[in-house]
Length: 316
Figure 1: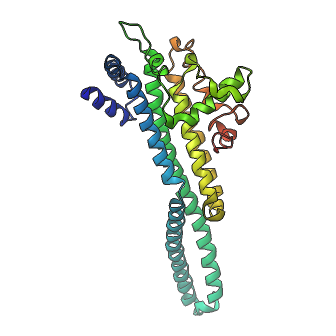
Figure 2: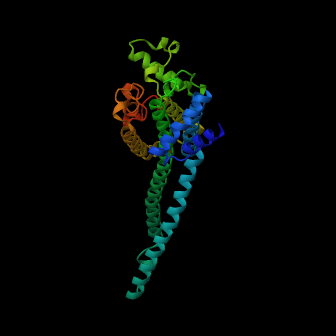
Figure 3: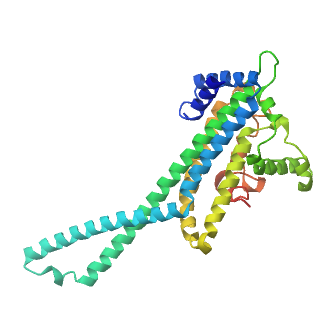
């Protein structure tokens, strides 16, 4: 048990190698050990919870009042230093030009003009630096989200493909028979609503249903729960201090949108490459990748620019 736990932890903390054939084979062997111990569902949910915690930490480091304040302060400090440097160079150049012609520099560029020029230079540099800070922070955030999502995807993929050689039980089916942890309750509710609507029912009865075992997806539960948490965090940030940070949040959106679209596209490609021909008819695999790319009208989650504005992403 300790060896299996150690290997599971190793595979879950090394995202750069967790998708290789060797690591997936080792993951399958580890899951086999947990299956024999009767702890496969608990081990799987623990791994998913760990990935969710990773995304929550990344989001807390970006969508936080202190983080937004530090971006502004860092941009201001760097812009000020560069503006002063540029102003000094201009002054020295003008001074040399004035001396060569025997005319005082002050007559060419008085104090008011220099101040106006400095402010213009500072504002230009400040906005540029602030855009760079936001882009870097959004990129760091999306990398963490992508790493966590890749781990969950790899785990889901191995569970879906692996069967116990003795009982012939599919590992994902075993996990699907367990109760969904409370921390994924929000995602379960959203997926049940979509499932019920697709069956032609109304949302009032969705709470009495269970997730379709044939389409059970750990990745979907993880992704939707992550998006719900992110949406709630953004909503709280918008309301912080009577909405004083609304402008900062709005200004951060282009960088986050760009990083998110790039991340979703990369994940989509990874997931498509990971699907074998045998997965084509596997109901548990179908619909997982499309859940990331659908539009807001169909309840998409961070799927394209429209998906970034939908109710799930914004926690509505």
